[in-house]
Image (cartoon, rainbow, N blue to C red; front, top):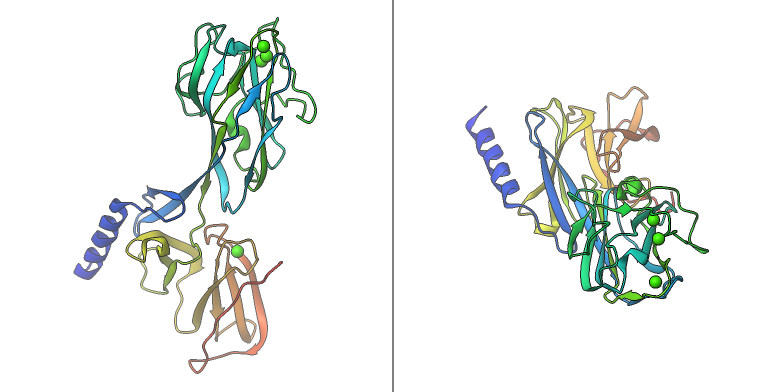
Length: 329
Ligand SMILES: [Ca+2]
Ligand SMILES: [Ca+2]
Ligand SMILES: [Ca+2]
Ligand SMILES: [Ca+2]
């Protein structure tokens, strides 16, 4: 490794160690060691709340039923979901049953019949598959982070009624991995035993984590065509959210090393909101024409969305190229 290359990698490493704090979302960066260059995959965390009080009516559906959150603008595939219930109070928490229904119409009963008959005031519970324990069945609730749970004591039914779906039997929030993030998510709360009532005074918060696409709007995409460490054409992404002061990704793409017979552009070719990297093969093409080879942003530049000859003859250095996205495609 030459001195410049060593400096370059050390600089990258320092930059990555600083971490990234984009403007509109939290971005966690995971370093995956796959030899040289260092390949980074990023994930993004989106958080939305409905802070309207949920009244837990006695032996009935709550008001509102459901409490809804409209999610929009989420890109990537869901890798994790958590739910926070803020300021829950109830005279007998084991009366409470809660079902989450996603924008993609999957459902899970994430909290049911927990906390025994111990009155609670303003506890805040986060339900997270990665927590160590579920909330207790036979003792009182305390604020904290717990695994989703659906206890089913014989004398305490779970009476989810229309418009809630019939429960699928799912409990874990992993139910929603790979689900559609954008759209309306619904929280159905019921109280299934007479006498005691309660509320979730601060409403609820939905936190969705996705695997982020490798290239995002506003990023500076630098393309290393040849003499790459990986032996492939590489994409090195400078974070627009960090004013290009750090790398948000280093990717060895599916495309072999390239040369002066190739040009590149970035556009959302397939209209799925994730930018794609477009390779333009100008000459020495199999087809005898200038060709377009689109690397899929959604697939982390590991597949081609399309590879097409064009009506344009082979081209040389007297030509340059650009591309805009294809709306509605
Ligand atoms: Ca139950
Ligand atoms: Ca119940
Ligand atoms: Ca009750
Ligand atoms: Ca795209």
